[in-house]
Image (cartoon, rainbow, N blue to C red):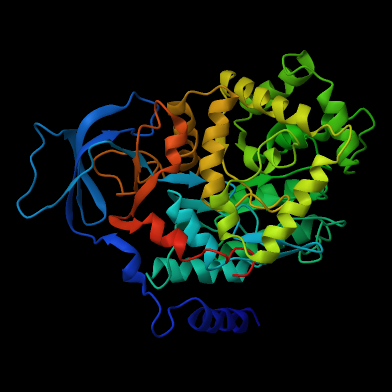
Length: 472
């Protein structure tokens, strides 16, 4: 049966996602074809956290970086495609670690965005994503295959299997686990189908979570979680690898928390909002995560849009939303503005404090956007906003860029290939106008995104999906 579904997905892609007669083809979005390329006179932020270097030349051959050095002394091969990027900065392609392929459709449903989201991720400088939970995993697998085969446009995709959820899910689109054996069986099945990571969700029990973690590790994959029924320290003891969203969703600070029960989110948030991040209560949780080598994924953009005092999404985001999606987002923001006594504003600031404290203690912070919430957090743009918010939280621009690139690559076990700029690595390079190491907002000025040595035109990709988010 599942093979039949895969065939249907392939048919769907061929009829829905590929270019129609008279419409732009994939090659129309390529600004720089693969070959021998010299990116001259560019500022380089290598993604390791090291200081930016000015007036550098990056040499690319096929899909690899072959050299990086001062423009005055770097030898350029004869016949290379010379590109002068004076006034621009080269950064590593971002590694988005909470980058779904679906978008909220209202009514408790979520729709995949196979056309708009992959293009927006790539246009925004995100060359690798972890989907971190799937509504339709076969759909994600077919999308990945289409991109890998150069039939579709998009980033490299680390497929996360279907949500590992218990009874009480936020949507009927998710399977409800029936116990530990079901959890083990589900993980094993989706590893065979191509999943390379897993995500536990809010109503999973400790027995189910432990079984899923053990099965994932047995197959050499990692498991993250957006948890509610289980606290962070409990999850660390069970062997979880990563925790999504951070402090704002950790329910262990709710005094009436019951075993394997997800408490009311607002009440739990109010309890956590009363605590000082520097208190022993919170610091002991941080130490537990660090000692168990548990990473935390920051998703500040999706939280920001539920805080009344934060800015609305800019025009560039609204332009890619469909009419219905834009109206729904604006109505949601209007409702947020009317919320009284919400713990969100306090929790937003405490989340930033928590992330700084976690990194200071030696923890590994990852970055993503989570394009869910009230509908204003959109692929690519949201990843850029996440980096800006990390800087607002107190990280330097160079630290924030590393969190959004090399940290994710290291967690995925891909740091030898992606996540930073160095000779021998894949040519995943983002060219932006300006200097994000001095002004982080310049990260939005993306002009060309190289993925495996092919340079994609960011503006053309964005223009191709205007009005499409929420539809396809």
